[in-house]
Length: 239
Image (tube, rainbow, N blue to C red; front, top):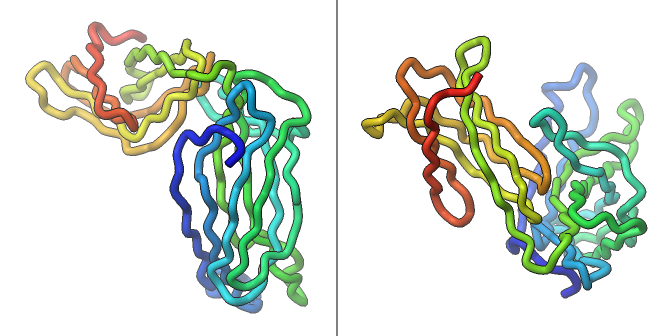
């Protein structure tokens, strides 16, 4: 295995026919493949990583691999085309039941940078539909600035102009921080608002979650991460 794996496992993804949603009848397109690992990071001494893609269907499928630069601006994720990441092969046909090894290297190494790797199915061109993506698996790739990169996230909670509680996470660490869920409680431990929106706080960046309206006085923020639930005292709400 080349590369440092943040999280292993596999994604099994499937697309079922959706002809009823289309304005004109077209052949039903379906596909299913899985990829391992699902999260990858490149340590400073490692130039490349590998993905294993398996076609669980019997029909061959065309696949392309696209990389996007991933940053966060004003607390929101931003994705832009990039030539930093080289995928080999970038386009290929995966035979029924077959497996393909995809190598991901860096043309330009930016320590601390993050990317999204899209593994997309390319269906055959229909008579009227043309080429369109039938299935896409979206994977994170992080370029670590140090071998033991870790996040260091500070939270604050404010109320926006519409009365919603907004949690803001600022990551001053060297590694990405994953968030699975958020909950705001009052002083007695009563839940005021929750968010099940998953997200990642990139190194040196800020990400925000709009949690919900709450009439009570928030006192504690509970943050669910892969390492467990972290409690953070809110104090006075900031505007």
